[in-house]
Length: 375
Image (cartoon, rainbow, N blue to C red; front, side):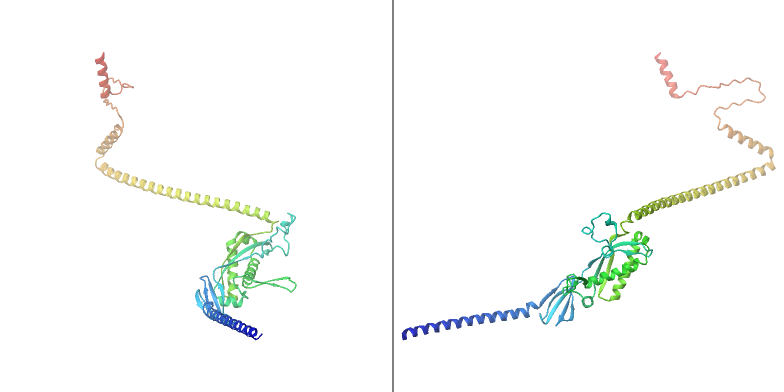
């Protein structure tokens, strides 16, 4: 019995030693793991990267202490430091509060599709008490990430959409955040400008109306001082009147286009006629001036010639008359091919051929000679 007890005690002591040894190994391994995790936690986990189109807000115990431009950084990790990344590339939001609702699931009757339903369709009232629908797109950039994060109720993750606010019963109250703030500010500017503009300017002067809205919204965002700059505001869809009145506005638009076409043609005709008239007038004036100079020059030349003849005629009239007579005969005979001189005191009979044969040329003579030889 004693031998059996001794053997059992020895086996127990060996088991205890093996268990103790395994505990020591496990403790050492766990210690190494904990040390490794601590080293990793305070070294590699402290690294973070800010991409090229974003900036980082470095928080120390929840307080912003630094704005980090793009690059790689190391700071003590949580709970000491945390980083919030703010996108700085161009952001886009749509302002469709004043446009038609998505009626594919609401409208059952096609005729009702042309009616405006309050609470479903958005619309605006113009300065001349007309209804108009507009749909907008806003592009903006974040210029001051710190102001943007602190003053616009930005979500914990700025890349996500604005927070949705609901009641305890699950009733949707709305949203809050930077996109909601910017959208509402732009919508307020659209309301303000539209209320001061006639529908004709809104429908047919898109550029001027859009520029007024853009300037008003830009000034309103600047006044809020939230670190945001409006880049551009443009139409997602062209402004349009209510669907029931759209055919009448289309007729007005067609009449306006036809009027502009007629006015354009009339203006072109006016310009063309004016240019042609000016050209003809200049041509007539130039021809008249040239004719006037030529007539004056001819008259001056004849005057000089007459004065010279007059002086000669005073000194020797007969010689001058004979010279003039001779000059006139030369001028007349120059244009006559056949000339016949008949003395005034001659009684001789003169016979003239009324249709004389034409003079033979050298070729005619040669042809006659060749024909005579053949005979």
